Image (cartoon, rainbow, N blue to C red):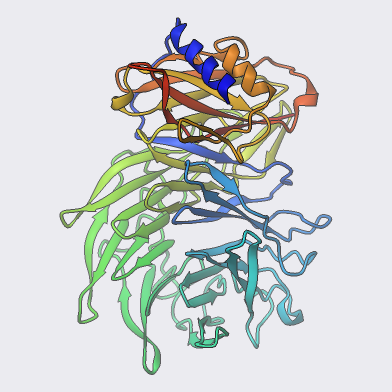
Length: 549
């Protein structure tokens, strides 16, 4: 510990190199998630959920046993220092069934509902099911609390393609591919004894089109979309709002766009929170829009605002995904092969009765990520972060092979003492450079910084002047400390610019040793106050770098 403090002080006194400025970022990439070992078509990131610092990402094509696409759910928790710490992997209750576990996801606090639409529940082919879990407060991961399947199902009902959960209520929806009526939505509630029991059904009207892409539950209300109002006219979707009363679930309102059947499918995405519902109208290559409706005390729903993207490229697929949390809204723009913009999220905030665009968060664009199926296929937001899923993104693994396994990205507002790593993967055969963008806000302007690293992980970390440096000290830490600005490190030691920003790099040459494959490095930035005795004034969360073949 003393040695580390002395070396930091020496570094502060001997500064000779300035970092390049990194300007204009509204949001920083805090974590790029692509777990190693995912198989072809693992679909990691097709569905994701974010709630109060807990992130879950579905990988419904993951092969756990042999070649069966059982699926799995990955979980991360945001630590006090801002690092995303992985929790135990969640796999289906029964392995080897190929159930597409993780295609549907819904998170409420520390309770999780997972859909498995291809599970042969009750021996019926692809009838589907859903499984509910509570997070063990003792660190044991997700614990199975209940499983839901229809009592009488037909083949290919695909229950669990969409699921929704709010506290002690949940709903499991089948995937209907069209007209006429099909299986009903199933609802459940947690009883006073802690058991999960049936809470009724909501039948699919016989005259509407396909259902199952989305649904959203909040308290006594649930939003259920259908792709067409009459089962015939394309892009004429409707969203039904049902309310739970003393006699069960009843239809309260049917919402339809005032601008008619155009510009994508109304209800492709839906998010209900309290007395507001946000509805997306995104389709591949279509410019939205999105709609926000609000409920009055008498149960009447009126259009509060219609949101339209301002950028004709970044707005393609606007509304394909959507997430509403209180006064914050994220609308995903899911695009296919529109280089160099693979997808984005438009982030809005409710201010003075109007939804104002705060920023546009663009997805990862640096090779080897080839986003043929777009970032923001799913999007999630909470008070501090926004997450984008790219479940069908293709990752180039060598000059001749492309593997579709997916990815997810977590962003946080700039100025929050961050170290943005971009990209999060480097391929040994190709070589490349990871940029490490520092942003500590204008209050840190001109202060010295040093970027430290570890190949031994992030916990338990190291206490420096009362701040937690989330790196496990090892030989690489010592290298970054005593030999900054030396290959493979670039500008890892210097002074922050007038905005409190800087830019460091880590580089590897082409055809790097194959033995490095699988190595995960973490870097974190330390800011030094030299106005008096040298002290550490700020520490960033760690950012990862994975070396792959």
